[in-house]
Image (cartoon, rainbow, N blue to C red):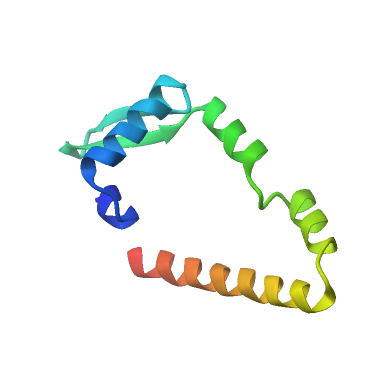
Length: 95
């Protein structure tokens, strides 16, 4: 299901998850509700990596936006707003 959602082949996703698990960023656990499914959870290390590596951290984002012209900054903010609305709509559709 995740592979389809991401537009990846199952083998590609499996390889990526194996690498993330080897690096201790995620753990895979059986889903008690569905024996065919596997749950993927971020470890503390994975959460730290997401937080520390995100270009959307507010302080990093502010610095990036400050470096843009007024016109480009307006376009960038409008683009971010569009992405946020699309993400919310997608979340509602998926339940």
